[in-house]
Amino acid sequence: MPSPVHLTHMRCTSFRFIGVLACCALAQEAAALQVRLLSSAEIIGQQVIVGRAHCVGATWLLTERLDLTRVSADSHAASTSRLRGLREGEKPWGLACLSQNQLWTLVAHDALAQITAGGEIVARVRLDRPRLGIYSAGERLLLLQTPAGIGRPLLSAGLPGNVGAFTEWPAPISQYARSPDQQLRANLVSCGIGVSGYVPCWLANQTRLVIGDGTHVHTTERDLRFLRATGVDEAAPIWDVALAGSSRVWVLASARPGPEGRRVGGRLTRSTRLAEDEGFIDLSPPARLILWAADERCVLLSATGQLVEVLAP
Image (cartoon, rainbow, N blue to C red; front, side, top):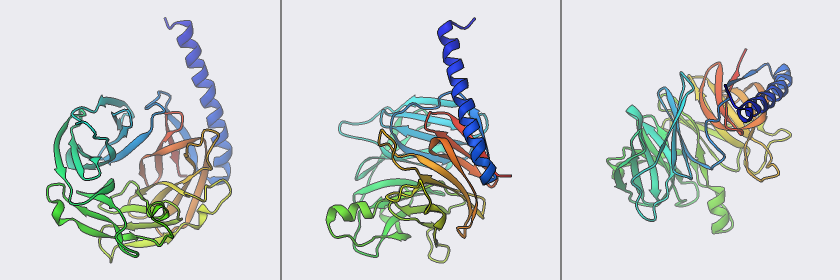
């Protein structure tokens, strides 16, 4: 029989999410989207997530405390391993997933490390130049580099076994800024969950979304006008993005910083690749990031650590 403390915790969790679902129900009435709680268990604590990668059937999360968590897209179960094998001075940042759950992270600005599903570092690759971030682009790694001049690509893609053959990713391109410090902030790129080699990327302070596969002919750039709404943080309007199929995009907009100053995603919009708004929902509690998406559904990690699913009608 559960202890009184356990029963009290269960009741508090239930009451909290009854309130959450009631708030979301009010929002869905206007947005024509539905929301439901997938799991009341806490998938991950409040530690900073330094990397997210989506593989076939699962999403992986890497935290600043060196926890590597796998969340199953089918069962919604989560399993966590401790990252092992780091050398002195190494600090993982970012996460990418290639075929067969082959995970890669940056352990230094000029070094990649391969991680097994069990959290063991099994290989390292020395890079040809400093890098600031790492993402997946189908079977290739997508690396963020420091600006090399106005109008130059900020990303390059290639295979981890041949870093000398990485090729420039057409967009986003570097922007002008008045000082070196402003230049770095103005050229910070984030990339979301891609599909079939196409990846959504954006500059942190803009509402423009770039979707491409690394070729100029298949790269599009759209201004997400629906992000210019009350409650969206103008300093960093796009928080996360996931492509779904060949035509849908789920966009998580940044909420204005709360009392603790931590940014989260406050509004989820279902859009076409032409940036047409197909409905939105204001999330309460807000979301930390998107875990995976399909044409009609999007699964998010809430700010309280649970899995929440948003469904299109």
